[in-house]
Figure 1 (tube, helix red, strand yellow):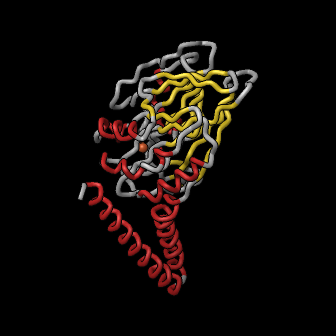
Figure 2 (tube, rainbow, N blue to C red):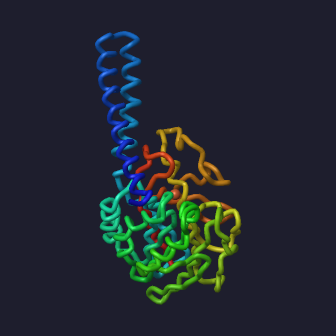
Figure 3 (cartoon, protein in one colour):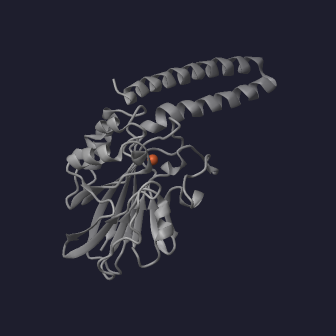
Length: 302
Ligand SMILES: [Fe+2]
C-alpha cells in the first residue's frame, strides 16, 4: 500500500470526526433552543458554525462549476479559440478516480480547441497522479498541454512529468507553440513554476504582431512580465483562497507576492490581463467554502 492510500484512510477519519462534530452540533443546538433566551442565540451560532463546516467538508468540494471568460486579443477577431484550463487537481487522499471521471465528462462536453493543465496534479504523493488518468484522455482539437505546479515539484516532478506526457499531453514547460484556426495564428508559451522551477522570462514571443498567451501555475509570473511581452496570462495556484466568506473573501492569505489582489478572476498586472482559475482541489485543509471547484473556459478572439 502506498503512502497516499494510507492518506485516504486519514481522509475517512476526517469524515468521521466531522460527522461526530455535526452530531454534537445538532444535539447542542437542540438543547440550547429548548433552554431559550441567551442559550438559544448561542445554539443558533453553534448550529450555523457546524453547518458551514459540514458544507465546506462534504458538499462544496463535490460541486463543479464552469467559469467562462471572453478575451478578444485582436481588434476585429476573425475566430475564437476555446481554451479549457484545468488546474490544481490535487489528486491524493482528498480525491478519487470517480471525481476526476466526472470532471473529464464535463471537460469533454465543453468543445475545447485547447485543453491546458495548470499544474498541481498531486498534493504530496506522486503515485496519486493515477487518479487523474481519465482527464488525460480528454484532448483539445488543436492540442493538449501541461505545466507543473509547486506541489508537483515538492514531490516527484520527474515521475509526474513522465506519467502525464505518457497520456499524450505535451509538456509546455518553458516551451512555445503556435496553433492555427480559420487562417489565424495564436502563440502559446508555457512558463515553469516560479517557486521551484526556472521560468524563462519573458516568455518567448516569436511575433509581436500575432496574439500571444502565457500559461503558468502561479500568478506571480505576472510580476516578471511587462506589457507587450504577452497579451494574456492564465494561471491557477490560489484555489481562490479555498475558504471564503461572503463580503469578506478569502479567510487565509493568498500564497502569492501579489496577495489578495490575485485571489481569483480577471485582473490586470503590469498592463497585462491575468486570469486566475480557482482550480479543482484542496491543499492543506480538506475543505472548500463558497469557492466551488472550477473548470475555466477562456474564449480567445484572434
Ligand atoms: Fe494548488
